Length: 327
Image (tube, rainbow, N blue to C red; front, side, top):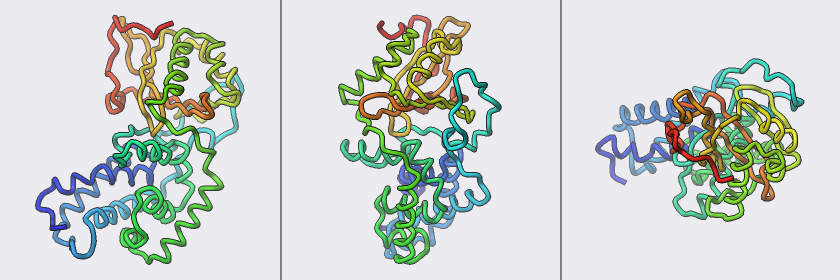
């Protein structure tokens, strides 16, 4: 590859760099900062890039690796609510919210998936699941980087060693340790999400109808008996399909709410809108859904994400005449 002549050549790597930095850091704002810092450093030092020594992507990922490791020094591990406390009981108070940097944050697929083949995209979605990204945070930055580069982004061992400025033997050892650690902390995989799958589409449609109509029996029918629901930035979470269904159906905060489909972290999801004073509906929270065995096994409602709806392809407002889901 010849030496790039302008910033556009580097800008083409924004997608892969975002995919790497997000899995390393687990936060949306931090990821943006890391990618931008990487591109700025790469542009300023472009005269140091030697095409005969490797790909521009490898050289740029080395910069991203150093940026991420610097950002992770002294940082608390991002996690999911279920990693922080035991399940609450129905009626328990939410408690005080934690700072946003304590939780893994949602991201749209378009920014963190690098595959182009439809089949590969479906498989890659598993590597951006919230649970997978949270599990990565249990690894040391060195192990995390090695695993992401080798098993997720499919860099060769030699390229990974170049990125991490290490040896192939050290990288292989780190990858093996990381795989062992992930096996002990990574939860069972959910169903691969395919937006064209009729069964999954029907399940999600049933959930929307039951949620919007406050149908307890309808919600129970689509939720697993051991389903969970969480609401970052609170550590509060519940387990049990019936308990969750009753909470949703009788909660004043869900009254009149609308759900518009979205894709969040490789999984189905929704933008939840609440009635506003103008007669329409305003963004309230992003909701990510896990499906296991053909039923809904997990719900994550990200409070405080109303300003991110457009990023996920969701409308900034629902007009007054926007009809609710069919009953």
